[in-house]
Image 1 (cartoon, helix red, strand yellow):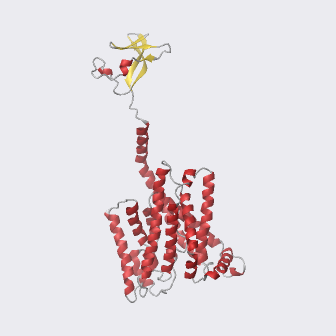
Image 2 (cartoon, one colour; image 1 turned 90 degrees about the horizontal axis):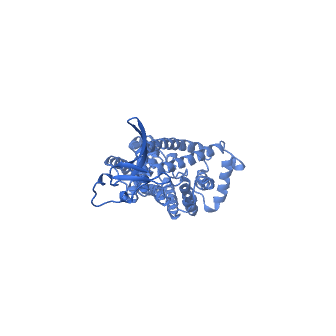
Image 3 (cartoon, one colour; image 1 turned 30 degrees about the horizontal axis):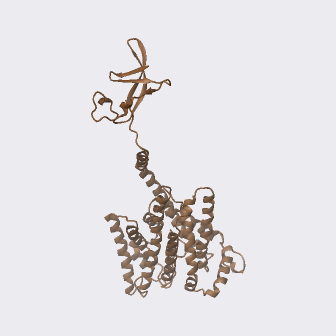
Length: 416
């Protein structure tokens, strides 16, 4: 049976009633003649058409151009591009949501830290170590469960660990430098100097991640830097916030912020690099939290003699101090006198701090380390711009006062 397309082309049906296309229709003639209108420069397909003409029904095969069929790579790229066109609105909504969650948890962290120190007022160093070492057990337990359930893949677990070692080392150095500086600085100066954390982040993200920032952001950072420099420079004047302190301790606090900022930027780089290593999959935040916290605890353990001496606890008295602190934390034993409120208040703080750290790291994952820091900066009750009023309100603060909860990055186990 022959099927007529036009006077020049005839297709035959085989026994299976499928059209057989002659080879010459599939060729690409250099000099097309009468077949030029049917040159298959684009893919063609056959369609069975039912019709009626002059009172008679008939059916025939019709050759029609197909819709543009792209190769799999193009389809993949197109689908990614299409999804990315819809992604900004969804991504911005997620960033706003997690920024609000981080802001709320940051405020709660400061309030609960003050409440936790009511029963633990004699053991703030013990509470800090509970955060540091307790989080390792908690995070790795969660990581183990997520790995067993398949949420965390084997590819995620074999990522290079030296990056997490660098993160842990930087965070531990930030703790040591910050605690040494905080012991010599007045309380109101600490949150002001900690604002340099954001400046370091912008610099490291531009240097290590190749980020570029607008002049508005740069001018805002310069404004923050000007406030910090003014606060530091006031130390040379009598009656000012940092009078009699000298330049070493403010600089050490700024350097401690640099260590912490460098750790957060490396975490952001780990997330970015993991997309390539995991072939498009996103790295689970508990991989970063667990190994980062583990290496931080290791380095803090190495620095523990320095930290205990800094807090006025000789190394040979450290075991008895930990025993007394544990009794106060659990509100049991002879050392529980004056520890009313334990263990509820310290546990509430620890749980909120865990949620806070998870929220911060998730914000780093879906946005950037700078965005997460901005959310935390908004929770500060004493911004740099208001440092003069803070100075006047607290000008009689004892120079040897320890850090307040707004600087809890060092004593409250805060980490990105």
